[in-house]
Amino acid sequence: MNWEKSSQEPDLAIQPLPDQLGLGPVGKGISAAAGAAIGAAFPPIAIPVAGMVEALHTFGGKLQEVQDKQINRVAVAAGQKAGISPEDVVRHLLEGEDLALLAAEAMDAARRTRLREKPPALGYALGAMLSDDALIDPESVWIRILSSVEPPHARILRLPLDHTATHGSGSMLFGVGTILKVSEIGDAVGLQEAVPPLIEDLTRAGLVMHPGSEAMNPEIGIYKVPDAFGQPVKATTLGAQLFARLSVAGVEEQSK
Image 1 (tube, rainbow, N blue to C red):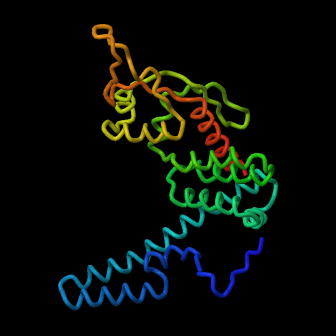
Image 2 (cartoon, helix red, strand yellow; image 1 turned 90 degrees about the horizontal axis):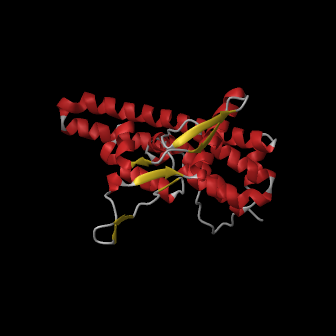
Image 3 (tube, rainbow, N blue to C red; image 1 turned 90 degrees about the vertical axis):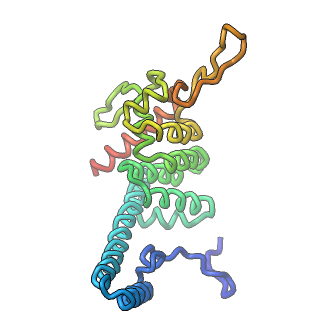
């Protein structure tokens, strides 16, 4: 595939984050000028505004640094899985549109996540694709699943899972365990009213299910749907596999 751009092709490259936030060289000048204008109009707040502008510049640079590290973790993990260097990972991912799009999805998820094991887990999915074309479809599903999971989701999903084994490497296996009510999960993780939408995220990803969410009412002979907090929740096999992937990714990254 020809990746050279024609002179008419629009430049669709994503700007570096500092430029997106107005923190690049031009953006800094604009924000500084805006700060000066506000300070001139309202002299008593001139010093706080100047400090805010400088703090914003510092924040943008720090955020870019953190996100670059997250993306690098994806590339390193992909290289470990595929047995190639991170540089070769990038080169191979750009050889086809499908892989390039999946890599973009994985790296975008990695740069925004607070879940420590997520970047290497995303990288392992990309590395598996590079090792075997037949794995592109199943691993693309895992990239989508991993993209939807953050620390609150992981805390909720862990509750109905059983720890079944620990490998010599330290990675753990999990099995489908206890059925819990939404209200019980809310109490356990301390999120109460915030739990139902998080569980729905997990349900859409296929990580949990609601077994017997419709119960027969013997008095009137019809089905009765329980309220959100009364619904039972059970982890799926996919949910157990997700935790195993996160565990392996975290252990493997720390061992390198």
